[in-house]
Length: 352
Image (cartoon, rainbow, N blue to C red; front, side, top):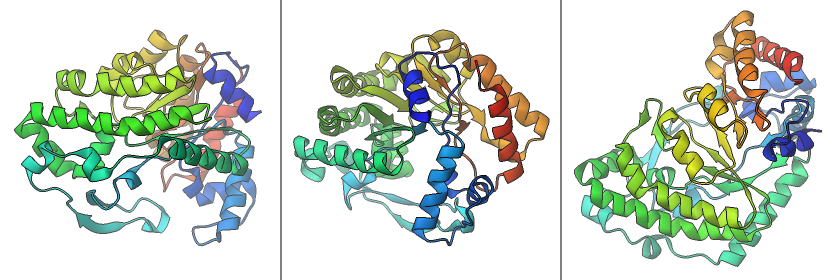
């Protein structure tokens, strides 16, 4: 049922039930235990965690499993590590290790991506991507699985440079940094072409192009140095008949129309981006995924939670490709009681 609902949404076939996805439930051990009855926590073995996660996916009818394969690993050791704040329960993901891969602006402006990061065998990469996709599909068979690229453009340059050098390079010489961005897009293109050659039907493309307040460089810079080249890379996927789902965190109201122009089939976004505008302008032509505010689910009253789900459902139900989700994800520390009530409201409102 979950898979069928998801594909109906991606094909704009207006399923009778509004499908849903969720993110980071794999780390919400209290929720997993409450929903499945499996005694699981952060210290449980891998098999117990897997059993709890897959039982939860069935119980909550998760229609989409968000995943990409091409990420920071493609840069090897020549990348910046900025550390990582504690997010998971017990802060097991806290990382204090910091390393700046590039400290010289001239080295950045003149970086040869092929020489530094190499070229790939596209056929071998396509086969690897598809095999990984098949493995995940076997482990999570009830919904739509994806694979794709996390480091599309801005997110890739951020992995290489880190925020300090990225902003410095952009601020010191926006033209030369723009040329750096073009070279990056041309280099990462080989991965888009490999993904296009694979038999993966639904592709996830991710790029965090903005902050919570919107673009952090002038929009005209993106228009010249980013969007035309991302659009070209996405065209390889579209020409191969793929469904292309695009995820960007932050507030991207200013870029909604530009993202659609890139050729994507679905927009995935946080509550910082205006669901109403997207539904009104693209609700009949694109799949739309989001955008219940995790802050309300985490801290709100039952009335707040019901109003938030109703807001999204009222806007999304007229759109054939709408899919509900908490954005940006289920936050650690969220009240299990609130999450269970959120699900009650979804169950009450899910039918069109």
